[in-house]
Image 1 (cartoon, rainbow, N blue to C red):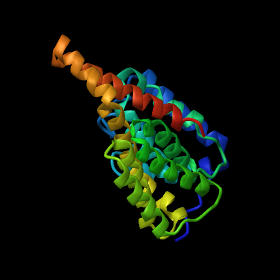
Image 2: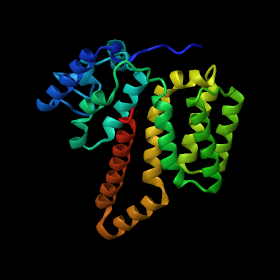
Image 3: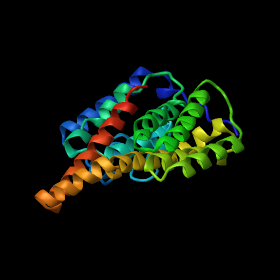
Length: 250
């Protein structure tokens, strides 16, 4: 299975400029909102760029030459940012995207960053298994191709090593790679689907790890449940803000 060849903005700086200006105009008009694609002149990170309400990720890929899995991941991050921070994200995304580049390896690089940050919530065995997934993705960036069996073995090891969200999340990535025709195809075929899972599992790691659970419990006992919920929400926003920064380094 051959990966579709795409060149960002089809090598045209003016095309990129068009979308940067569109994003800025929507921000200044306060038309960037969470929870919808494109309705009544307002939209999310992707909706305000695409100006369509259905199939926006694929549509935008066709218009800009930027892979839809990047847009899907950006969409997921956008929805979890604070209402203030999300407003500038569309223009930040487009500004960060290079012109005339093959962005097929963006998501593996992003996955590596997430795995590195979330593995701290694992036991020692979980860390070892997660490190193996990281190593495989690093080798994938260098052109190495793993068999389905190798990805399945890494997935099984991560799943068995630890009950922590980070290890489960690592296992899902390895399993995704194993299910594809080959490891390289996994990036193209499964990245869009599992980008959302990556964000969820990384956020879960932040929300559910002992550090945050203990803090939330402490807040609940001392300040009542609404304060605990606010603390958890703040932790979640912080995690996705980090993911935003990770994604914007192309």
